[in-house]
Image (cartoon, rainbow, N blue to C red; front, side):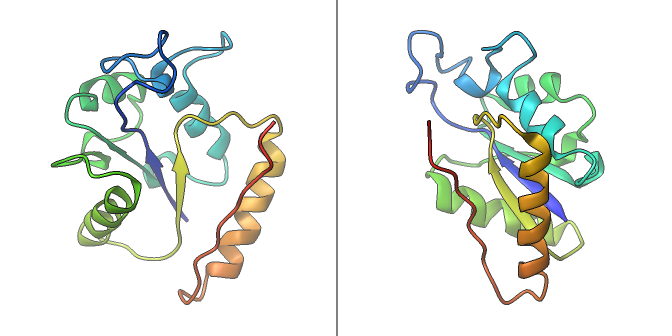
Amino acid sequence: MRALILAGGTGTRFWPLSRRASPKQLLDLEGGGSLLRATVDRLAPLVATESVWVCTTAGLAGKVREALPEVAAERILAEPEGRNTAPAIGWSVQTMVAAGGDGVVAVLPSDHRMADPAAFRRALEAAAGAAGDGERVIALGVPPT
């Protein structure tokens, strides 16, 4: 399984803490690293670092590279133009396929908090198994609290 983490945005939803140059996914809100860092960390060991891709904006690509030095620069994708979530996913997955490989891609936001990362990985693994034949899209969700 490969993971595509969506880490774009304009930094307006968590104002005044977030700004265009430091959107919420780059903030350390709980003292354990940024939300983006937590997203990558919670995927291990289910998704290897070399299978992690990040879609971000051109303006944030450098900061994302700094935040995630273990993710190869060519897997940090800077959108040519911000067009919201669905186009970002479509463009990123097309780029991932062109780079080689196929199979299940988990698309994840970079700014969520998960209280139980192990349970999340189990749910993600089950979803990947269900989507494994390439004929399904699986959506996972939790009631927000």
